[in-house]
Length: 112
Length: 116
Image 1 (tube, rainbow over the protein chains, first blue to last red):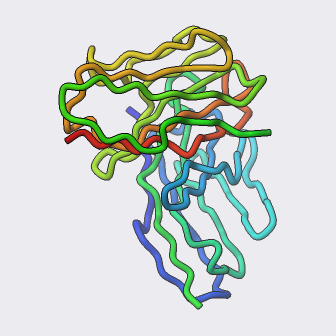
Image 2 (image 1 turned 180 degrees about the vertical axis):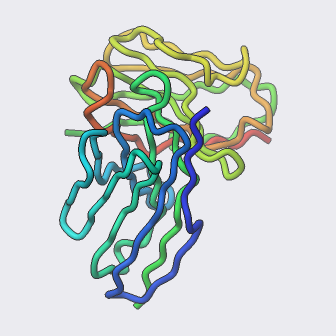
């Protein structure tokens, strides 16, 4: 059974810092890995999707890497801003390609 | 693009009542997913449809839960009878890919359900 773990569970940093969120998964036979953002009272917003053949994806200040062999992914956020405050979740398809298993998330707070 | 639309946004009802949650996927998306999010268990997939057909309902907790997708633009998740432990936020998501492998899922804002 695929298990997805995210560390840390919560993180508070001052504005401007670069930070790394971690995601680990137990079954490396994945099609892709996705990073989502969830704001309070809202649904999830897809940030980045990394195919299993890729090692990283970038979107603006966000960079996600994937190491299938070690079962790890990282989300790097450069020059953090208060607007980055949210919960970040990673997810991998499990069994059928469309069935996502989510991590428990990292709650990020960026302070002024 | 209006995004995935869910209704109601909030629902408070008494134990034993029937609850119906509704979802309108993004036009043109042919895969639809129902999730439940709780503090204890996180985000769990309940069921997903492809081209209006249920593909995997192994996440549906018990027979009190049922889901339908009568057409490409509408789906319902029904709980009958409801119980306090069903209290959670229920999300609907859709994606344009048949297999959902290469396209991210687009989520609605969820229905916050409270069963008293």
